[in-house]
Length: 345
Image (cartoon, rainbow, N blue to C red; front, side, top):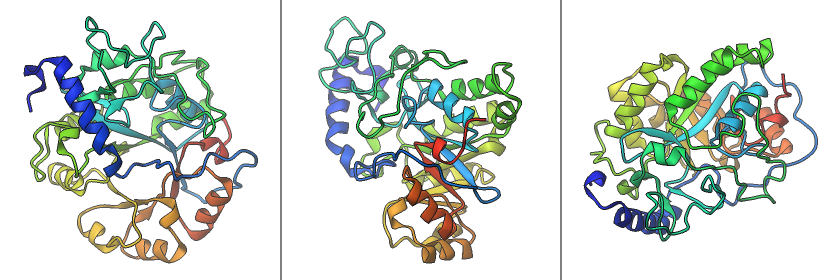
């Protein structure tokens, strides 16, 4: 599908309706069944080398997938920034979880809803806005500083941060890499925070949906890297971050294609079921298993370790659940609340 050759308004309507209808078919890394972020005590000392992954930055504390959110995660000393990528109409990779723009998360710079129809506005749509139909610069102009789940994330706020300020636009992967480099050299941060930013890893999810190839819409053949993966690998190489990146996906085809193109990049398999063939993942070159937390127990962790897989469950926001999983032997956790694992440094 050539999005550039289509009329933008028609593309927005068709894609947004289609994606909205099928969105529930794709496993998400934060289903509504996940428990709300807990308040209260922090987890105690962590095992040596434990991987604290800030989910979409620090979604329980700052608006998701924004520079202030990633800055907060870095302030808290996460070892990995977890994020999602989609593909824009002009062929860039942007840091965003959903295939559409939800007005519950984003607004126009003037404060109006992003989805309010306006025939003179290139980001207008009768429904939700399809990311794949929009250019990176258009997405960058939105302000995604809203909390769509205040009951679930009562501590999330959109206060400006020291470096990012109130820049809540949707950024490209390259902009995020550049921001982390800026953070690592900033006198506004402590020595420990700067050191952490110099070594922080990036767990990047390719948001391919095996039930709906049009969600990325780049002509991916299921075997070779599509333009989406090619651009992702180009950005990683351009910033010299190949040794700091893990690529994860629910879509095994995306992982296998990336492994063929660059077998040196570590891969993580995201799962939701309890009957995964962990040995098969290892044979595919996958080195990390990231299951939904509710499907994990000590026995499965031992099986994963026996075939050479590290275990990093998602998305864990309750201190008691964190403690259970750490005691069972997980190698890390993906969480909206890294403050429950790490104190600000």
